Amino acid sequence: MAGRSYSPIMLALSLLLLVSFSDVAQAYTRSGTLRASDCKGRCTYRCSATSHKKPCMFFCQKCCAKCLCVPPGTYGNKQLCPCYNTWKTKEGRPKCP
Image (tube, rainbow, N blue to C red; front, side):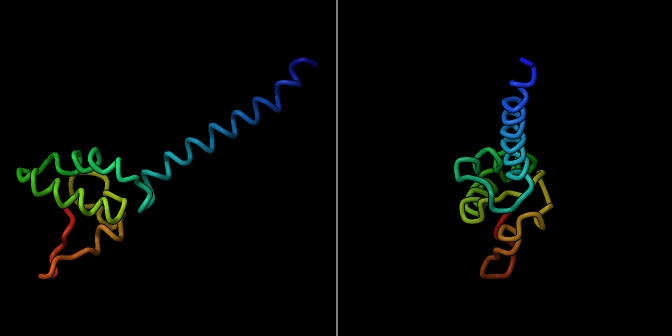
């Protein structure tokens, strides 16, 4: 009988954990879900493979602040962040690294 009284509590805790982890997973897969405080870390990784780190970090952080998204990896994958992908310079070149 005592085991049955714990099952609703365990169910509630399990659901709470599931919701918490699904929010974390969605933050990495959906566009526009980052917080401004997450930009520096994401941009540091995004710009880690370039030899032009200072301009890469400047533009990546600027794009992240506007779009709240940074594509995964060090290059490419921009289609995963539509705002990041479509923001262009006056000359029509990509603004975001």
